[in-house]
Image 1: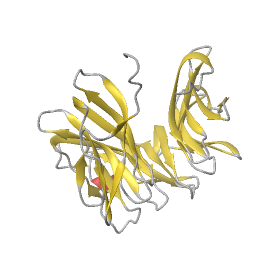
Image 2 (image 1 turned 180 degrees about the horizontal axis):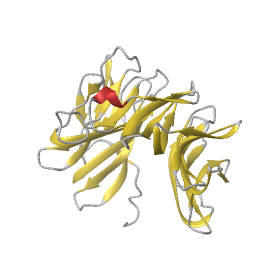
Image 3 (image 1 turned 60 degrees about the vertical axis):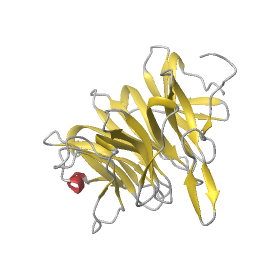
Length: 286
């Protein structure tokens, strides 16, 4: 486990890594402002904001294009893109706030933005123009949380007939419907990552008001279980099917975990509870 460092402050957070090993996220400076950063080759590099003091890089593609949101000189936070051409304000839908969460290898950016009625709407940027995707879920608010290289997009939103947020997947083609992924009997679910095969991961509520990590394979949502505790969540999945996230153990301690697929004749199945690989240091008491 390697510490990546800060910009002189106390805290930092790594959010995403690309296939070249470049990492994006945020780090506090000497004034305790959270600044957008890249970590590369053992060095931390501060990214410019839109004139304000704070920001976060949320997404990064293999070409080194990063996206996130930063504070403007007026104090608003706008979706931001960093590339070899410099820093770019991606704008809003008429409101004062927007955020870009992900960018694929084609440079298509997704996130959310407030419209002129102050509604948070899922957005896709192709070039400099934000396209409102909010009507896709027919709900009160929506966010586009991730996009893969096939153009598939994971969405957050509250459908009109649901009591809370439901994870959803959209093909990226306007003639196709949004697929709501459901729950494990609870009221809500959230999707955080997807790979280029269309597998989606996140967490879903259960009838007992706990939540468990899930993977959705195109037809079925599978419960990934816990380490004996009440809660778990999956945050990302790569193209080899390895899933990372956290799970509670029987003592209520949260552990970083990886779920590793086991090859079987003709298909892959996820490891059952009790056989997934833990990325923890068992040699010491935490």
